[in-house]
Length: 122
Image (spheres, rainbow, N blue to C red):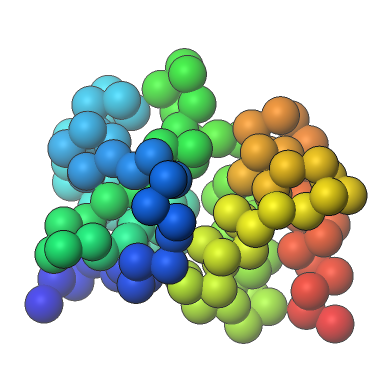
């Protein structure tokens, strides 16, 4: 078993995911940095058919992790969420945002997403 943490495959099949080598290429980093980002909870991976995959929505067009994602993952983790629950929440439709929390992070609405993540702890 890998020392790299991974969630179960809780994502809808329509969610675009990337294998770790592709994530490393998009981030312009060695794959060992991607492994470390997963261990440090900067990213969350799923395991699908034995392959580790990261949601493509976690990366922006400039080859970086989406602004606010790392802080949101930290808040959710500190609130007692596991990787499966984090992914479900990040990709769940929310009419009040609108869209999903990951869509809001990608749309530069990180403060609102973090505020909502903090509210989940109570």
